[in-house]
Amino acid sequence: MSDGLFKDLDIIVGGMGVDISSVELVSTVANHPSGRMAGSLSGTALADFYARLLQLGDPHGAAREAFDAFKTLVPALAGEVDVLFSKYFIPGGKAPDALFKGLAIGGMEPPRDVQVMTIVSTFAHIWRAKKAAPGRPIGVNFLRKIERVLLYGLYGAVLADADWVVMGAGDPSAIPGLLRKLAKHEPVELPMQVATVPLGEYKVRFDPRAMVGEAFPESRRPAFIAIVSSHLQAEGLAANPETRPDAFVVEGPEAGGHNAPPRLKKKDERGNYIYGEEDVADIEAVAALKIPFFVAGGHGHPVLGGTPHPARQVGTLFALSTESGMEPELRKRALDMIWKNKMEVVASANASPSTFPFKLALVPGTLGDPTVYSQRNRVCNLGHLRGQRPKDGKPIGLCPADKPEIFKQSGGAMWRTQNAMCLCNGLMAACGLGQPGEPPLLTLGDITPVRDLQRRLRRKEYSALEAADYLIGKI
Image (cartoon, rainbow, N blue to C red; front, side, top):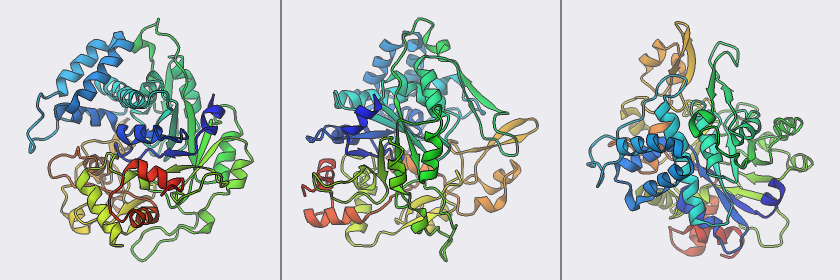
């Protein structure tokens, strides 16, 4: 299945941010006339995304239609889905200055309503993209570091018949086995990373049959694409049939979002990471594994048809297209800065609570602006990147982007709070669904193709189809 699927793809859209790789963007690229492009939706925080979309009145009725499709597929959950829809739906939308109602964060294992909301929201996103791009492959991207809701997101992808799941920001070795079991609706468990205790002492367990019923038919297993930063990591995963992915994304240090740490741990005078040649993966060694792969990070330049080149995953160029889910004014501000050669992107060592390096665009009015960052009220009320630490016999969540005193009381080291940013709220704001007054956060990778395309078009803005045509040398 996977070999045939991936050999027909030259370009895929990377799964970016919270809804940056939106339904509209991914389906538009998947429908490209070449027939050799597709994309991965962002699977991050989809339960929060749909809860907030409903509170805006569900413009165009997209959520209602997709939720109804889920209820038809899984009648056993129809009642719970109706309750969730009614809980968050506000006819006509909330007042602009009113706060969004949040999901309950809960403990290590999310409450039942968050489990169901994650499943139905992930299903809805993929279902909508498949409806908009009939017959074309559609994937979904998850962050391995977001553990608490991962099993439910994966199951939503299985129920939606996603063609693939792609994952980075952590060890993906358990994912192939989880997808095999979830496709059969078998019980699964995910060992949770809890500081100071052995991996596996705490687990999140999930029994799909308890939700969908005993008679639910077996589903198709999505292919799995592992994001790796070195050939050694790829070789390790490929060596074991239980961990072997169907494909790789070999990501270089130019990629946006989370990155692997630089091998030499070099930093500049501002404390941001510096990458070198030693951080570039050995593509020939990955190719020798005879597993399909895509290269990513710094590969957004034009490649003429017929020119030998590995298949590519492209992010930043598409993230700034008009079809992306980025809040329009933020997108225009970023494009204007790139047009004027004023955009700077750094590899922040401390911004992400995940501890991974994170590419931060230094845009005024965003969390990349030191004044905005210092004035923001620190709060952790979404909790996706919370770490876990045992306290009084049970794990508790803590985040370095929370108030320093709260982080310290929970057992965290104070130095980790310095320059730590709330990615959860910042990325929600970047797609236009932030709480009132919450500043956005923008992450970008290599911006040189964006400026090159602007120059060729002689204008700042461009469509996803123009970006796609640029990549194959048609602009």
